Image 1 (cartoon, rainbow, N blue to C red):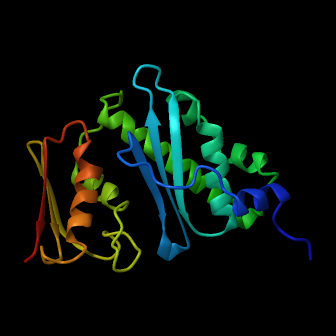
Image 2 (image 1 turned 45 degrees about the horizontal axis):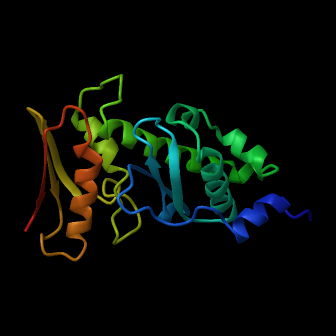
Length: 211
């Protein structure tokens, strides 16, 4: 049986580039879930004048393909403008790695989505979004699918940790089914506020715990 990974994939898997977390990143994106087998977090630092990605790092939970694609995607994106980095495709990453087994193609998609989410996060925080979609409860719940529940490794929507959401006059209210003194409550609150606070028409995010 032929080994499914190219030499390039193995090189990036054994010695991945740009691994780690950037403290106080200009933008960050999280895609996937540990419980589903693969997750990628991407962090970027952007030159405010040139909009060039000057630093980029990633954290990965998953297989060799996941780690290798995170490594190569960050290599490709470094030094590019945000607009150029948006155009990076999963096919480009796969080709750079000498091909991936078809069953692992989603890993390269995940890394690209993580990069695009980090870019979108930066653009929202800096008022660069041109198509301004009104924030609805549907938008809020979609955003909350990218907040992990540390108790399970799945997101807080799928694990029914969110009891209620509401959007009114620029104020988003999120009710979380956890006591305020729970060990994970501060981290969940911070993630929720970060995911929602950068939306263009949101003035305040209230995170309420049940006890």
